[in-house]
Amino acid sequence: MKNATSPNLNVTMAGIQFRSPVGVAPIGAHWGKGIKDPEIYAEVNGEILLKHARAGAGYIYIAGAFLKEETIDKLHDRARPEGEHQFPPDGMSTRAIKTNTAVAPYGLEGMYFIPSPFWLSAEHEKGGVLAKEKLMKILKKKKPEDVPIIANTIGMGDLPDTWVDGAKRWEELGADLIEVNVSCPLPTTMRGAVNDFFQKSFPARFQGVLIGDNPDLVEEITRQVVKAVNIPVGVKISVETGFPRVVGLAERIRDAGAKFIHTFNSAVGIAPPNIYDRGKPLWPFMDGSPFCMASGSFLRIPCYRDVAAIARFVPGLDIAAAGGFVLPEHCVEAMMLGARLAQLCTGVIEQGRSLIKQSNSFIRKFMVEQGYQSVEEFIGLGQQYIKYNEDVDMMGGKVVAELDEEKCTKCGRCIDNICTALYSDKGKIKIRAERCAGCGGCMIACQSDAIKLVLRE
Image 1 (tube, rainbow, N blue to C red):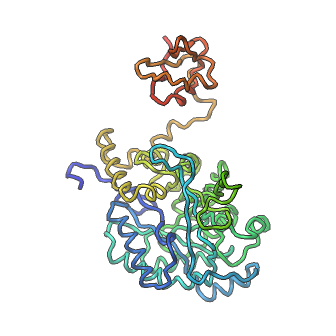
Image 2 (spheres, rainbow, N blue to C red; image 1 turned 30 degrees about the horizontal axis):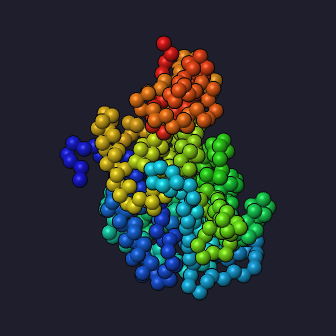
Image 3 (cartoon, one colour; image 1 turned 180 degrees about the vertical axis):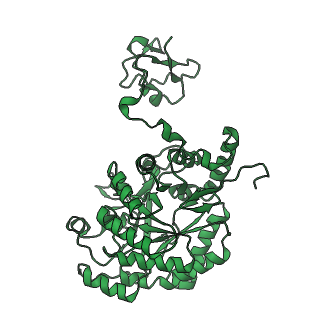
């Protein structure tokens, strides 16, 4: 529990105040065996989300669709018809595997995830309406008053009305912000998805990033949702959009009336084959390897890129950041680049809700140590140092590598490398200063922090 002198973590995004910038992605209902009973679904998933809040999350994040009958009729009139598909008798199942590359600090680079079959159609979503309504009632009754609810609404096909239906119903149920989901990578795993995207002809099911990478559609959907509700609207985009296209997409989202943008959802991936079993899938108890959702610490690089780019080139649009945050420091790094909220996903799956508490505690301690009175003081602070390449003084010829012989373990990794300046002399690592370009590559190779860059004498 924080004491009287401990700084609070209040932050405002899209005009709504949050008690902390740290929150959790809508993970919970996505996992495990499907629950058909609306009461049990709401109770089980409500408890998961409330546990996030009790652990200190600054907001609760839920997802789903609400479609009116007339909208479903309109959708089927407009959408491309396709063959019948049937759910397994026990409902949708899910499976996840970790990547096979161990990376510090937690030995897990990320994960691959697939619900099978991924068939979110209008008819399927109709069956979940009651469950989502009951879930929302539980959250409104039991959540802390200072924890807003962000409702992520999904649509079907390319019909904006399907997003509008969801946004209006979430608002009626008490959501504080609406987030338009045009980002999920899983629709790309379905048969025909690639052709659907290029032909811009979509069946009557959730399309995720297939819609999100059509800027005209995103702008129109955003504009109609903003017009339909009285609470702030944001858009969750995809890592697949990439740089610099993300700048143009963000501009159109802002100009359509959105107050915030969420960068971003998981990537499209495919699990590696088992090289010791003739290329068979690594998935347990699956006879194939579909294109799937890929998430993990590797997403932090494009997340930072997109946050920095939007903050720099698209003023007037608040940013919520997600992607690869597995340390408390990552939340602060994203915020210094311009994000106002930092969302945990893989980090919570790997480490549990303790990461929420650790992140809040770290930020408070960080603020005291660095002399910040509020979170607002360091949001975007790193933007002032973002420069064009030709404007950066790299101090060419003025820096050189320096070796700390006491720390050096003489492992030889730095000389068994591409560097032309390092060499071994009677078992000791030496540096030819006249050859050193000051690139810092040797620092990356060194595992004992024995090499650093210094100014030349």
